[in-house]
Amino acid sequence: MKIETVTTMGLFAAFAACTATEPSRPEVKQPPASPAAALASPAAALAPVVAVVPEPVSLSFTPVIEGDCPSLDVSLVGSEAFIHSKVGHHIARVLPDGATEDLSIDPTKFSGDPYYVEIGDIEAVEGEWPDKLYVRYWQTDGRMWEGSRYLKRKAEGWWPLATHDEEAREWGAERLYRWTDGNWLARMSCRDDDDCKHRGMKLAVIRGPGKAPKFPELRSPPHGCAPSYAMTVLPGGEIVAVGRFCHKKEAEEGGAYYAIHWSEKDGTKTHQLALTPEQARVREPGPVVATAPTQVYAAILGEYDENPATVLVFDGAAWKPLAPTKGKFGGMDVDRDGALWLVAGQQLQRSAAGGAWEKLAFPTGPVKQVGGLREAVAWVTQVDGALWMRPDGQEFARVELPAPVFSTDAKYAALGVKSAGRDVWVTASYTEKAPGWLKKEPRRALLRNAPPREPQRCAQSPSYKSEKGMYAWPPAAREDCATPYAILIRSSVFTRSDFKYPTVGKALKGKQEFAAAKFSEVEVSGQRLVGAAVPSVALGRALTQTIGKAIKGSRPELVCATPKELRPLPFDLVTGKLAP
Image (tube, rainbow, N blue to C red; front, side):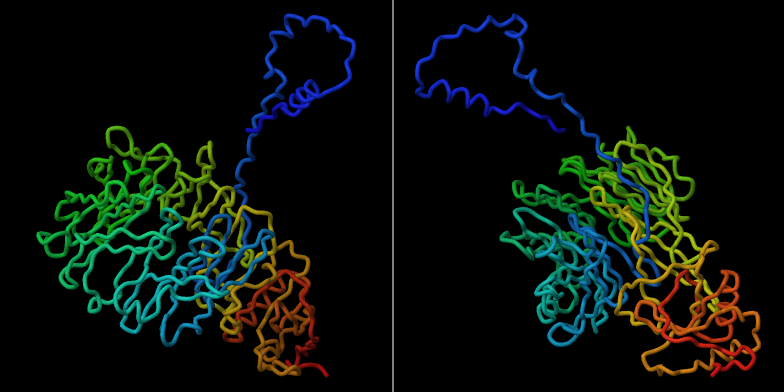
């Protein structure tokens, strides 16, 4: 809220004028002030208070990038957005104008001695831009160990947080948390049972001046017990971890479930969770969500996917189980009123007074995920890909996403939402089947509530360099396209400049129905292609169908564009050869 006030500079000026030495002047009597003026308050001179109502968050989305890009996702770090994909170890920072800055990983720098790092899926970009930036990725080493590890941004490149020798001795960071006084806290995990002196809960400060708390009471021998836990760090620095620990000597084989609370003031407090034997036989601990040290929720997942989870709440004194749930656990979040929203058995429900569950009726089908309930935009996704969103102060409403750019008949299915203030991103999937393909293929996309720009495409085809990450590409030709162009085959770097493309000619031989097509070699986004400008979308689709069936692996497509022509290819449709 903006309030304009009268400046005091005028008062100081008047005071200075009264105290300055000046020649004497005749006294001038001022008329008496009116009673109304005498009673008037200086506040009456203030400008009217004008309530500034922010513009509602836009829920109109446009595609940013889509295509054959496994694990394509976005991470929001403060006011920065980073797109990342497994293909080419691609990472790109999104600039304010919508363009991107390439920050991709070069694994050749640390794939050998002394690191031996193998990069799998890129899971997230975390930290602070530009000098505290980290990438979490899935790592597999030669001993078949798998788990999350981190790279740090340094000297304009990415480097492991620890050397191979350092990690091999014992522990590596698997999760990072913003802590207190500028510290970054790492949750550590052991990569090899034979190398670990003990197992348990171990934290380390990976950046900052502080020291991480230690938990010697949670240590256990390297064999006979496997700790597994989830944790969260509150803004005040309190740490809460819930999971299976080998706590003290009396812990049964395989460990028992405990909740660990740590604060700088009170130190470590341990609560054993009263679970039945069935509840204690789990796949893994579920998420821990805390809005305050006295309001913490944790989920203990069932032994099998179809078994329900046990959800517990901590009120600052004790842990208590909530009412039982039914069906597979699908996630949970806490809203600003402190109510827990839970997806169980593909049903969305909210905790109500008395410990009961209130079923929420606005979804039109089975629910997949819920999130953002304390953010500017809350969201719910359904199994069928439908997306529901709720900006601050509003009700949940279904959001319709646009059609994919590079497909004419596909439809986005929402997977999840990331938001930071007014900046909202949607991750989506779709399937595509083009001429000559044996089956539908999965595709991913990122959409953003920002002004539209030319969308990018990723991981075009095996003949295209996957390291490129993302590139400009013309949209698919729809019925209203005035310039349809049929891309038929892709050249390689070894194709001669005067190559006559006999396989294309053979496929066109005797096909007089394509006489109106103008065949040529063109360039699109740096790639040499063979295609044809066609007078109609219908003719272009027929041409791509013919080539797709005749030339294995050609993967033709019909786009709406007028590409840069490199040379004409005047095929004689009678002989199938290029005319002289």
